[in-house]
Image (cartoon, rainbow, N blue to C red; front, side, top):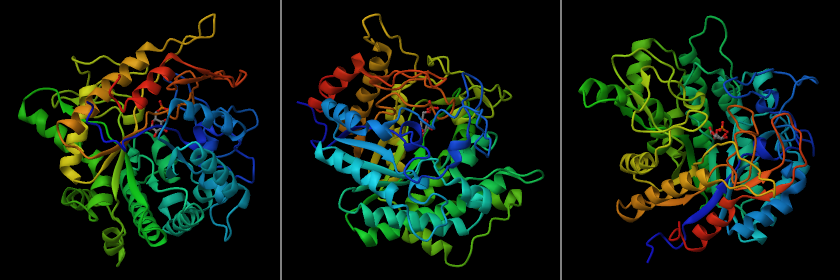
Length: 479
Ligand code: BGP
């Protein structure tokens, strides 16, 4: 008899810019991610600031969910999904971000999508900002550098909460708010916060100031949401990548502990409601001048979250006596002192495959915060082979997901972690965020579209489709 909670939310996860397409349809304005060109394996995406006709922007059409949403949701229903995580494109609702009135066509699109999901018994789990800030806010206001953008986000959140208060219960404010801690990669501060670091500025000081405004925006949204519907469950969302010490040498252990602060800084504040001492000490030591105004502390305290959503893909390892050897993926930054973990294999994109790390992460996060957790991203990005008969035997993906589900079930059943649900990333093939590729596929549904935008957009069930359908039907018993 499986002891997974009967109401466990088995689902799938997506993000507007990576699958909707319709980037300029229905009144939508350009977002910060609409000016990022295609990358390729090992070739970072370019942030172009403008829409160049001759540049290929993979997320402009993505997989055209905008015109396929009924077909796709019918496939999600056939899998038996209990919930679907996706985001509301901020610039579909406020094309420039600073308008007084929202774009009705954008609001109606999500009404139609949520109605279709609910018709099929699928609970929407909605991220308010998944790297999709209106480009105008980034270019004219400087993104979250500018405290004014806090009120624009609060207005966007309030508009969505009011419009969908009877259709959506689970919300998250900012996707992977902590990505920007890796200030060496401009991709993250740009997509998280609409910010670029200028010549002569201290990148971490700029990041922490933008982060403070984002933390205020998150807290204000939570408080507003609970006013509009006290039954809302509003979460934070972070990328959680455990950092292991390479050895039992206490210097390695302490280094890993210290580096984990970049993972914990944002959720510490979003869950507890105040700045941790290790951060205040860092600001003082480094001379960061972070403007925190009177009343900000009360805002943070009054806007703590109901649950912690997080993405888990991999773990990383550090060793005190080596220089940075650029181990680790672009997504999580090649950590200073990063080294290969001799006990783990990696995906084609260098992401370690560490199922036990998921159980470890669940225990560390639950012990730290003692609030419900939600695994809102986990998955295996891989190149899929389409056989002559059109079938796709993605056994590696099944093996990856099976191993990770086994570990999350141990965390729930043996360790007593309060886990709301599990939504594997990219339930249908979509554009990879860090690389801008279709080639890096996560889906259990294949989409005929390649890195250059060619293909029929035809949807095809992979072997993992029927496998996951059985997992859900047996509440995680039959893996
Ligand atoms: C996370 C993002 C997702 C998703 C995921 C996989 O950072 O929240 O948007 O993209 O990474 O990364 P990628 O798509 O680069 O393989």
